[in-house]
Length: 101
View 1 (cartoon, rainbow, N blue to C red):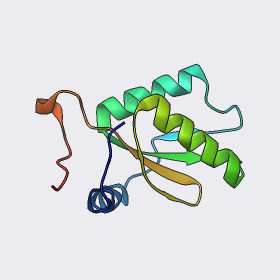
View 2: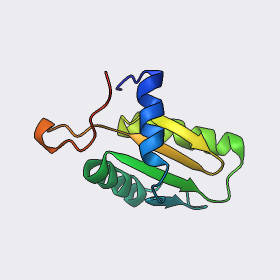
View 3: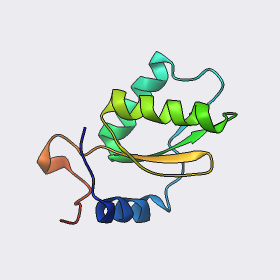
View 4: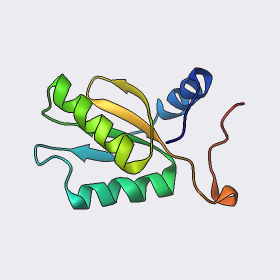
């Protein structure tokens, strides 16, 4: 998994501030189709916001860890029921976000 330093996370949180949630996770949890949708969203946007509906703190924490490890996308930040995930595009020419050094 990619390791992000604090200034990079801060930069990504700034970019994600105006984003609307791309994915909503309801009571059915992480299904195969939902994981595929997260994969596609990360491929398309690199930085996505996910909203968790009807989850307690510990359940949400487990889901965030599962998404991070499965998608190889670290969580950049979390506020309330939303979390921000980042995974850079594999193809350098298609990258939309340039992280500060």
